[in-house]
Length: 142
Image 1: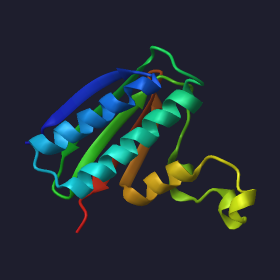
Image 2: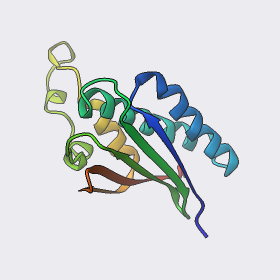
Image 3: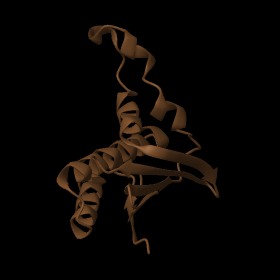
Image 4: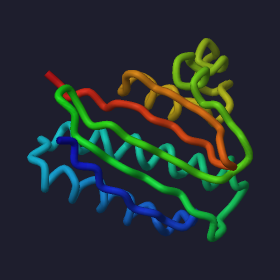
């Protein structure tokens, strides 16, 4: 039986601490080792920040829902917001174009989503019923 824990947060950057606490408490309850808990927290913080800054275009009280469950090989993250439709799958798999430029010439942005893409498996995205819904698996580190 899979145990799923859900929490909803308003789209405010001040809630980042609460999203991290949710992830850390979930990992503690389920015996997830520190390295995997930190990877999970990084992923959630990046997704949350992007929803607030790019999806909603700023802080608001719209909901962001995060659900976590433990599978055999990792933690499944269900992530949902009601921002305008945005499919992140291409950004998760391709480095930003500026990566080929010297550091001083690179534009800001895009690297965090790419890093998230390197830490996950089996991403799925759908826009339905007015929600961006992303599911991904954070594999347990060997």
